[in-house]
Amino acid sequence: MERLALILFICYAVLAFGLRTIIHLRRTGNSGFRGLSGRPGTLEWFAGVLFVLALVAGFFGPVAGLIDLGVIPGTDHAWLHRGGAVIAVIGMVATFFTQAAMGNSWRIGVDADEHTALVTTGPFRFVRNPIFTAMLATGAGIALMVPNLISVFGWLGLFIAVEFQVRYVEEPYLAAHHGRDYHHYAETTGRFLPGIGRRHPSR
Image (cartoon, rainbow, N blue to C red; front, side):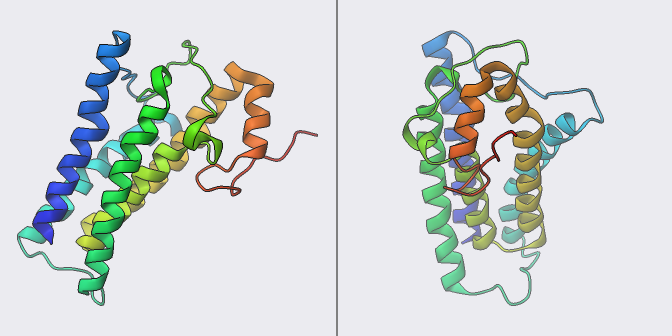
């Protein structure tokens, strides 16, 4: 199962970052990569750094399993590992297709001076951040396949990084560039799951 988890993670990285970047580059002439946001030490910067560290942990979790570093007590169940594999595959596929649904607006990171279209169609009709939802599902699936401390902490790091990225980088950026359109969208659409995390209407 550890070997399968490592293969799935590598495929996930290639699809979500490599192939998606190539497709975007050929379509628009730029990679879509905008790097870390904010000055070093800020929440925006911390979100980006933690995201990178979470991806590193996502790779080394299965590696740790291959060299028999052990799993968390009480988690060594075949049904749990197999369920994790199913979740990871679904998350991988969902990540790729939700990225594609952004079209030319897809980015890794945010450039505060850049204006992109507000995407509210496809999976974005149901949640505001379906890409991050799919990525969290992928990470959770891999952590269930190899439930050691590295994998679990990697997923927790990813969860915190996504929360910070969305709340302190992307939502302020979208609100600044799209104003009422974004506020209305956020009031009617959940943040990561349908109906959950909607913004309260401004008084």
